[in-house]
Amino acid sequence: MGNTQSAAVLFFDAALALFAFFVVAPMILNAISMFTVQKRFGETMIQEGVIDRETFDRMHTQKRNAGVLISFVVFAALAAACVKNGSLGMLCGGIPLLGGFLKYRRLLEYNNLTVQKFRNTYRSVMDEKKYNRFVDKNF
Image 1 (cartoon, helix red, strand yellow):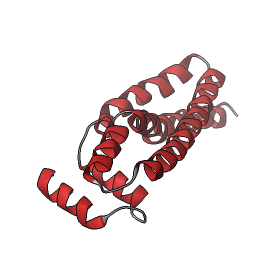
Image 2 (cartoon, helix red, strand yellow):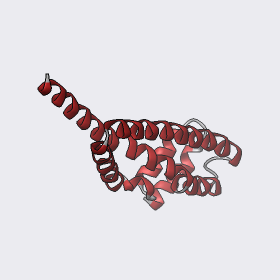
Image 3 (spheres, one colour):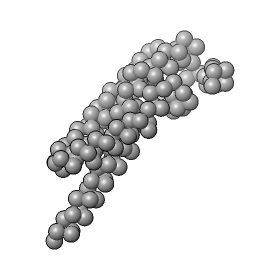
């Protein structure tokens, strides 16, 4: 019975670490990038005439709000699992979360990933020719 319980704790700790590293960290960083990098890139696209302000404001606000809400729920689930797991929970969840922040910090930079996210979000409402011209010139 003790070996089964130890194996269950080990699997739970491993799942907690993987969840923190591969799910929670990128979601939180992506939500933060909605307020910084993606907002700034959207403003540039408005100035370039790729998308109009009303469409950007509507779609960006919806995406930002959804990202913040989902990130909060996922982080709360991680925190609850860490607290439930006791003293090792903070290590099994906290250290991988910090590692995930370091690994996925690229989400907060103005780079090709920002360009791809913009294209995926606004593909149906943007001026594709102006967008491609801007990307070819700057990236």
